[in-house]
Length: 462
Image 1 (cartoon, rainbow, N blue to C red):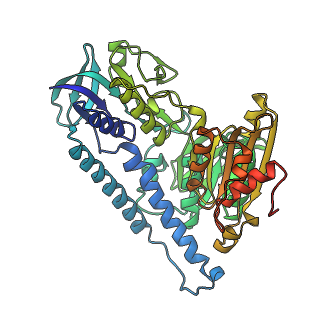
Image 2 (image 1 turned 90 degrees about the horizontal axis):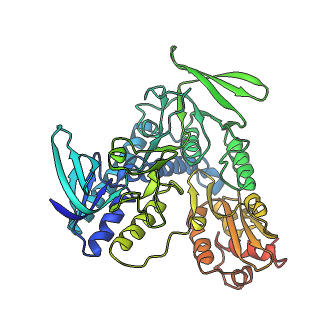
């Protein structure tokens, strides 16, 4: 079989690239070894949001009296929560199957491997092999849970994110190692359902990639929710020989032993670049990632790579954007290279976190003179009415030209608000233009306008 494009991997990078290729008239196939939609749809972005929604509903019910509603005592049915999450994921995967058929894309089930001469070898689950050729091959094989040397995952007591989504029963206690997006989302989910959760973070702050003000606010909110947090700490070893786990944690004050049922290793992701034929075909890698140029060409002509296996943020929407740019370039269009400094990052714990661009620390390090505006949700009418007053919007401007350098939000539904900032930065909107853009009242999004006004000494509601 000959194709114009073969995509290896059907996650949000791969399937999006395949659809765009088909739209542009290219004969396209996708190679997938597990389930269409990849990790994001089946074991990441989508099912975790379903779990988090169940936790949020449970939290609402438990706080119903604060809204003037009397309810009987709520009980979380852990198995039913997990079942709902899997159902949502299955529905989304079926949606990708439909999109493949609609766009006349061939789906080849099996593990793909690049071979010299623009060939792809696919090994099916039954061990049979078949070879295909393509003018262009796109590698989009994604990532998996990073395994720390002193925290070996056994899938039962020491687990990664996949097992955390389908545990047979709810643990009474859990230690979460790492406080990035995966760590804090699962910490919120399990703690809300009643599990005693302790987060161990190696860095000085939780969610360490975020602005420090956001980290401090999440720390306060999580502590208020009963989650224990140990920063500047590292897990030295885990003893799983007994009924539960004994976790040795090194802190500034010395080594402590934590006892729990389950340890969740949430120390990020590692790229799936093994057994892809990279060495045999001469595709260069560096620090565990495939080396590409701004249009995702690898060091071998006709072979491209996108998503978690290349440099840049390991995010679903980044992979999708890279896939579209890559395919449009293949098809002879003239796409703009992706601006990696205008990529929104979202974390869906409660309160939610959303950010884009420079943190305050990074902007100062880059030599900018700053104007900073901050508007707390405690001063927002909509937030008060919703009973969601935790958090704020923080905007960072270049004092010289008024350029919006970065935005950092923590609070209810802020992941739905960050796109305004991404568009504003893309259009090179200034602080004064944001202040003069009338925002609807009462909304959480008013806080963006108010934060801009605060930066320029014009804030009304503070």
